Image (tube, rainbow, N blue to C red; front, side):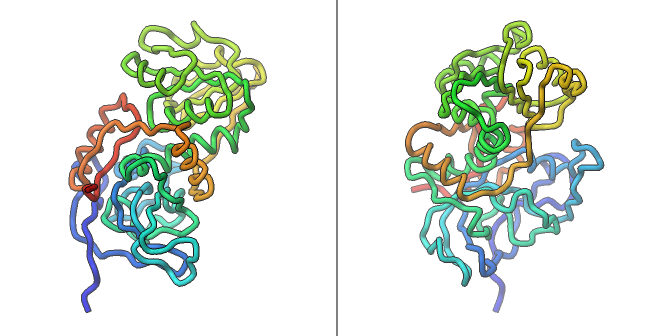
Length: 330
């Protein structure tokens, strides 16, 4: 009997968006503790394009060894179509979403399937029920960015009500979730982005907006309790004057923050690697259904046009998330 197949995007060589190939591949099968999901939408995340270029933008000593070929993607929203023998919490027909197998210790090709595809398998514990009030496109945009924001705020920093929070790159995927989740805990939130994002961020509830193209945050802000920097890069140290003595900086990406000078000011660094967590994703789903968190979408592309989606990501200045549509919703 021939093995079932599906359409997926795979990478056979490292390089630019053009290396994303839409092709027919074997359909994965769930292990006893997994489910098989018919993906309706998948989401682009920075690790997808880091993997596409062979992690060339990450320091060599921290660079994973990704084996070719592979299907990128960790975030998906879809419907359960089969369950493993040990799975009790999910049933066929359940609408679910999740960040699947991240960070993935198994980097060997397509083992288990990934999410730029029509189907994928997922450990049952990595999933949550899709928020009822949004479609699969918006649900797929949540997992990695939403969990990153959630874990930074509540696991690493342990945000308390009344604190002042500054989010650099506030309009992006992680940034716009940081803004809303911080507001949900009673924080005073300052959002830093370019001027084109001001109305978007004010709509999400920022208490103060700073257009970095016209105003340096260090010239306008002092005594911030917690700085969340979703941008990183070589100029991270420019934010030190913004943070109060005893405050914290949470880099979401690699950056140079002059940590010796930060230590002299009593500033500490709190961060960690985002990880799959179905329970926390369920809490995010509750906030979305309650209207406390909105999902920003920058653009939607067909799965076959994943290369165009990566080109959009490379252009920068993203507002919310970029999503791949796998199934046309009726």
